[in-house]
Image (cartoon, rainbow, N blue to C red; front, top):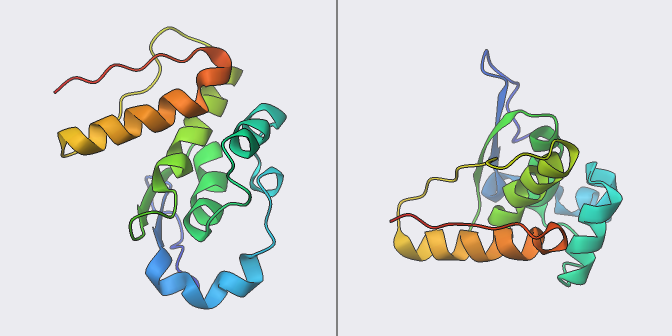
Length: 133
């Protein structure tokens, strides 16, 4: 049973890692390059010691790179922020502009964590983040 729903009119996907655990063995050998990330983003992931993509990353990064909306659900720690940060920074590399992304979240602490991840992922291009509370 697949946990990725067919895109609706808004071309979004819904991913639920909890319901995907039975697929872990079939997707365990996926590399960052397999997800459609460019060489710079693959190098960034490896430089950050992210050896291989987690299940949520495997399910969300390819459609995010295609520009589709993603809704993902996973427990703490599997790399949800990288699931959208890597595609956002890759898109920024392909289409450089001064203001590029706005990430909304419910808490100050989460805003700080997301900013730290974007800063790490975007360090190779000098990405700057601002937190507005």
